[in-house]
Length: 173
Image (cartoon, rainbow, N blue to C red):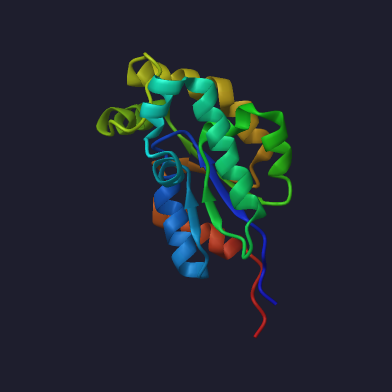
């Protein structure tokens, strides 16, 4: 019997969600559903472009849409979810049956990643101020939903993936 529990990787933008999700997907033979890729494929725009053109509320609604689509999919994928989904109490409730992996990145680490990638929305803020504000606003939500927590960058993406795999129930032949 194959475990069909969705695995959802959460954390601030730049924490390494996509990389960890791809490592897990490859190891488990599961599809990976990434929020950034979903937005580009479905709406033809990056998160930053959607936020600028249509507003933050539209962006965040589409990110919740991505999460819910992934949670409903079978076989269960690995989902790299935008941190904004945690602002929605219904989306947090939707995560209950999933294994939620939190990549808890320092604001300084996240700020570097925000600055390096133009497709990441800045919401009119400097990267460090944005990363600090998002971390402070969402930390309690991450705590609420996370089954596993890893500090980034202290724990490498490969170490995170290995620890998640070790946490999963062993498959029976």
